[in-house]
Figure 1 (cartoon, helix red, strand yellow):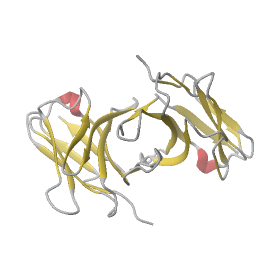
Figure 2 (figure 1 turned 90 degrees about the vertical axis):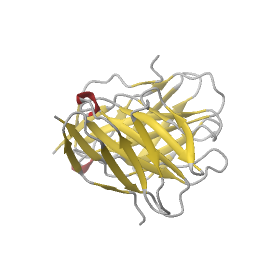
Figure 3 (figure 1 turned 30 degrees about the vertical axis):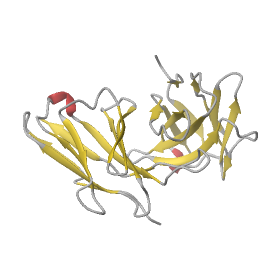
Figure 4 (figure 1 turned 45 degrees about the vertical axis):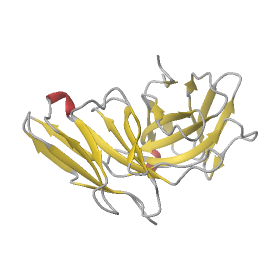
Length: 116
Length: 116
């Protein structure tokens, strides 16, 4: 069964606009972590932001913020003030269970293209 | 800033041949991982490694795969007899020992394996 669902089609966003990337997850664990990674066309995976299941506040890292709605099991990424360099695939990932279990389960990704 | 490195960046091999993909994790990290990404698909967990032994492995990581930490710096993934379906980008990642459930997995740039 899918653990992480990212279903948005490819998105075009105007430079300097904000964009929201949807991510829903499925787990029965109480302790888990949610991650967003960026993959530009060059292929590397770049960590953006992390949200723990017990964190009461939404995570923020610069222009990235995570809209965490635990009851809905969603962890949407918001990129504010988009830049041309934000054009990439964005992957949502989840770590389940206590920190002894380290595997990350990834979604299929969201393609974002920023246009000038 | 410390980073995970991987060699080679691209490996072409014939079906049935053995390949070894190499990674140098970040020096103070103790958890190591391999993931793969078949072209156009999501990133999939293969194996995690801690304290000189496999911590967890996925169903993909069958007897054709093995991992090793041959010295104090390298972490390798060996595929004994490559198949066409092993063609993918292979990512190495490393993390510190998680404290309080939070840790970040730092990814290397990947090795693109092409099996012909």
